[in-house]
Length: 302
Image (cartoon, rainbow, N blue to C red; front, top):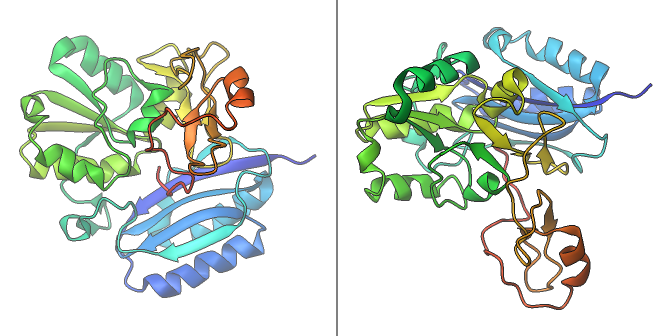
């Protein structure tokens, strides 16, 4: 019986020859009939792949033959078998495009100078102990927070990860510099970088969630400090952590509760927008009234 799955993973480690590494990863993906996206840089690897469970396990075993990859936390989730159109393996200056490749330094232990990693139970413990001294800081694109976020989180106005530098340098978050700031993102990779950027700009106490929202949701479901659905960069678009996930998203037209991102049918738009079923069925030909920030061509992030 077919068991389609998706794995999300990353590893920060020095890679001296990214182009050769790309060919190796492309060969593995093709060998095991996988689809998805992998980015290689001098800083390591960032990927999300879909395929049959046994094929993904074979890919993982072969990838771990490269010693630094033995430590990778591969995060599993349910797939449909049609989550990605193709396999793409590319070399980029950065694993996530913050626009600061020279600011990030890595060694065999990972990113140098990032925020302290907190396990999910340590997140709740810190909040319980220090209350309002703790601030959640969303490290994702702002549209992702429309369907799910940590309770009371600060959500910067960002359409892409490149916007974070401008946002942080603007000074609008300087009042958080003496707070305990917990950065979070889907699988953890964006916060590996974001926490360095924030520490370099004077934020004194910066944390990141080990394994990101995915691992927190695995631990607490919808019974912790997270609420809503998790946006995903594949054709599923969102996933839930339980059977009682709270709907926090609102339809761009009627403001009904929804978690459904759809491609706008306006021929001059085609961007992703939150629309409930009735509004989606009836909005053809109507002018766009939604934010023009959510891109159809989704970048690979985690």
